[in-house]
Image: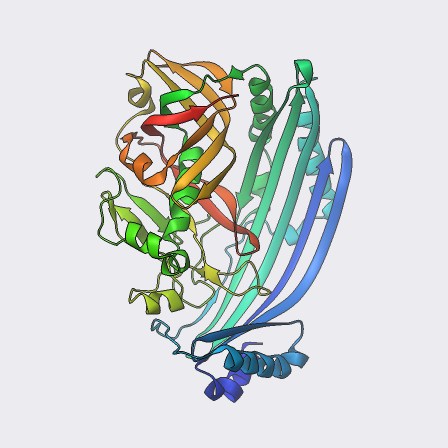
Length: 455
């Protein structure tokens, strides 16, 4: 396979400034329940590829579905790039790499019968449906995908990477008095072992527990509070409100962001360190090489409160005269790589949770995320759960907790960073490519003067 791709590159590489081929073979299964009903069972086998050509700064991307059409599609990509290109091709230099990256397997889901997977998911679905009479319905799913991606480019790289993703999602919807509806959700991910899905009954029931707790919660009174974010919401906050601002394609095309995001500029309290680290083992966003063949790295986006690095593709790194970071990623071979995060989070500090909330007379503890949006440096997030903090203790549950603010002011308003950072799985959307596997994480964060809206 790789030799055939290398031969194709060699036939055409002198016609453009840059040429690459990605070919992906994959097989996957997915099962879902909606309420008590089996909603879908799917199994698929795919072979797909993508060709990128660049000439005089103009890019072209063309799909193909079989090696028989490879030459025709390469010629098409080259002709399109030549139509577009009118400037100069600028790509950061990267040493050519030849490597094969294998998955370290536990129990391979491809060897587990589809009926056994269905029974396991059905048992978890039943746990949710039977948890409480107020649970009205559920939405649960389980999927696994094993793929091998072959990457060859005109600068001499030839890389094959295996990847296994095993995931499950458990949603519970509860209805209370007056037709009030609340939901709880729990997700799971493994990169190596189907058996990690077995025996997670406690985590599954957590989705129902959260839905029921929120039925009993009263709407928070709007105002300014000292807010403590749990590790999941802290991670989502830094991913959504700051991580996307660190993606260099966004910065390069936005003069205002270039001014706001000048490297070396203090933007947060001195104790804050924000990382994007694709080398962390076993997480959804972990890779050895990105989809341009650049080695994965640990990057400090913020180091000691100062803007330190951006996330780059080879093109953005070259144009901005910075080092490539291994952040060009594609959802699959049907899409071109674009600048994306991997595992993004806040490094732990030195405050215990008890110390973090201990001197708060009245505040809000915000847990997980229900939804949100960002607009430049402004953000709005809705917490999935909330609790009042009174006299240094977690008190009654509250609902409709919406947090609003400016990310740069918020980073300066952090008062404490917990010592308990964890990473959780997620899926990120950008440029029509969703959900790209990522993870988000952090410790508990205490932030002053946060605008909290209720109902």
